[in-house]
Each structure stands twice: as structure tokens, then as C-alpha cells.
Amino acid sequence: MAFLSVYGHIIVDTILDSPRIPHAEEFVGINDFEVRHGGTGANIAITAARLGTSVSLAAFIGTDFPDDYWKKLEDAGVDMKGVVRKEGKSPKVWIINAGGTQRGYVYQGVMGEIERYELLYAPAVESEWVHFSTGKPAYYLKIGEEAKNNGRKITLDPSQEIHYVYSPEMLRDMLSISDIFFCNESELGKALGMLGLRDEGELLEYVPAIINTLGDRGSRIISEKGEDRVPAIKPARFVDPTGAGDSYRAGFYTGLYHGLDYHDAGLTGAAVSSFVIENRGAQDFLPTLEMVRERLKRSGYEVDI
Image 1 (cartoon, rainbow, N blue to C red):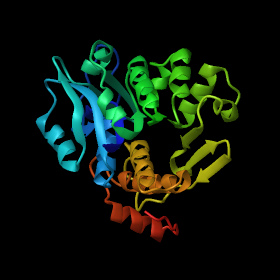
Image 2: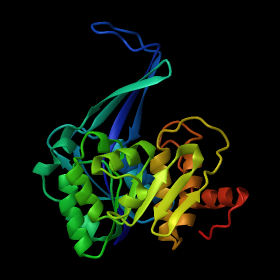
Image 3: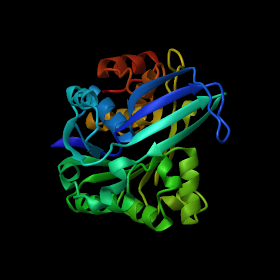
């Protein structure tokens, strides 16, 4: 039985470095490109596994999914029994970086069809915590209700998809079965607007705890006890913020895995995130638990992890 199951995308990103965004019917040369392993589900799962947390991953992939990516996840210790191949293409993202701006294209592939597929109950029912990230909320709601009936704890983390996948009704239904709502500032504002709420206090009527990540300003843990501020942990250098939020979540669950309260789990998440932003990509460098312990200690925090 895994401590954590993560439902979300496993994606191959193609990142293009261009001098500018082309106009309609125009071609522009690119300076460079790189192909990287990503996806919210995979980022969280592989980082948590690297830290020694027992984690399973649930997602659909196509027949074109790279063998080396599967092996990478498996070798890291991620339980892959909940990852199912379907006829079709895997999700992909193309990102264009140009002149300080970023644009992209998302291809959902088989993940866009998950409501047609079997319900992947097993990872959720067989874990203590269930993390629902990007994906179809109607599909996740059915699994979440079954997990809740089996006494599992649930986190809702719709990420950027809250802006274009969720309806107010579906957001309300998913929050009603959740123990934690993970969000950044824009996602929190979107949730409040969708539900017609004035502030976070009213949102607590739907979900017991909100973890609001604030980038280099740390994070907030909001519950009936009030607001608890968790500081950011300073990195040795800043290279790339890609995957910072996902790595925070992996560190947070690692803290819970070791019996920490939400505050110290948040500090653990902040420390993990500080390593990821020192390197390019969400998975290019993943710290060990010993490295996280040392960074927390050097930053002046006594966290028993």
C-alpha cells in the first residue's frame, strides 16, 4: 500500500527558444530546442519517490510513450501499475520562449479521452493520500468518492486547468470530498470567483485546508486555525522555476509521510523546491532526503524529517 497516489499527466515537453513569436503565415528560425520529461503527475511522483516516499502514479499514455521515460520513473521507485497504455498518442506540450514571453500548445492525446476508459480505482483506494492534479474532474470525482468512502485523504490540485476545464459545479463537488486544496495566487482567485466567494474564509466552508503557494514569498496554509505563513527556502542560484510547485507538493507529502504537521511539511516542500529551481527542468536534478535535511538545517529550521 503506497502512502501517496498521484493522478495527473505524464508529458513530454518540447521547448523552443525563438528570437520572436511569428506572425500569421510566417516562419521564424529557432535558436535551440530541447525535449524534456514532465507532466504534473509525473513531476510530483518522481520527486516524492526520489525522497523515499512510497508513491504510485495513475495516468493514461499512448503507444508512442518513450520507453526511457517509463524506465526513469520505474527506476526512481514510482509504482507504475496505475499507468495504462491505450491505442493513440500520449499527451505532449510545445512551448515557445521568445523575448521574455512564453506561448505554448497542449495536446491531450489519450488523457483527453479518459472518461471513455476504465476507472483506475486501485491506486486511490490502496493509498493513504490521493492527489488529483490535471485531468478530467468528472472522472476524478468518481474515483475520489470511492477513495473517500474507504477513508482515504484527498487533495485537489487542478493547477492551470481550473481556468478552462473546471465548471463551478465540478469545482464545488471536487472540493466537497477534499481535505486540502492546493493552488497558486491566480488559481485561488479563480476558485473564489467561480464560487462567488469573497475570501478564503468562505472557501473553508467547502474544504478544511488551503495551501496557497506564493513563489519566492513562500506559502500560506489556511485552515480554521487561521493563516500560517511558511517561508521560502533560498536556493544557491536561480536558473528555472519550471516544476517548483510540483516539487513543493512532493516535499510536502514527504513531510506528512514522516509524521510532520502541515507547517513543517510546508518547510520541507520549500526546501525541495529550492533545489529544483537551481537547475533547468522539473526532473533534471532531484535532491535526496539527506540533502533536504541539510538545507533546512543550514537555513535555520529544525525539522525532524
